[in-house]
Amino acid sequence: MSLIYIRQAAKNDLEQIMPIIDEAKKFLKEEGNPQWQSGYPDVETITADIDDGVAWVLIVDQKIAGYTAITYGPDPNYKKINGKWNNDLDPYVAIHRVAISDEYRGMHIYDDSVNVLTSFSVFPAQIEKLADFAAVSPAQPKNTIVPNVDLNMFEYV
Image (cartoon, rainbow, N blue to C red; front, side, top):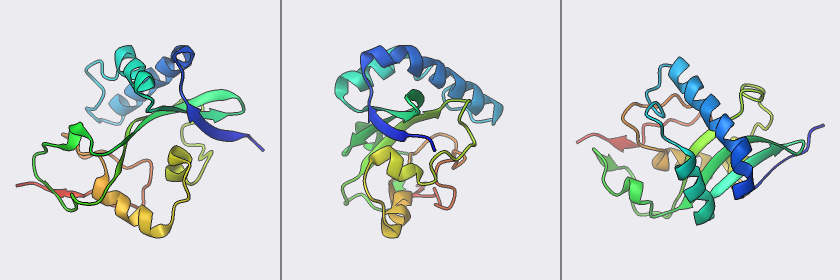
């Protein structure tokens, strides 16, 4: 059985994080997703995440297997969107820049992706509410994290 946990990322993790980010960029391109095809996220972005204390790494058997940034709202990225939120009153957490190493992609090393990313107990009602706060992007992303959650969380105006 593998030892799987998350911890805050440190600057000395960059050497292992950036190849995972590059693999994720390649994966998105192969999936036809236009996100992350312009150089973002780059080493400066990940360094800023680490400096801001929002960078987390997924560890599998003492090896970095994934990366994400978790910010606590209000998130400036979501102040202005092309549409309106179905729920803009409740507090929220934004999960940005989720990337998993090619070595672990598709292996379902942890079935409760949201729980491993947040280190909190997740209840069905919280999973259901996740759709209210999923990321807004120019192209509707393929939901590979929580496939049973509808990502249609905002309306175009």
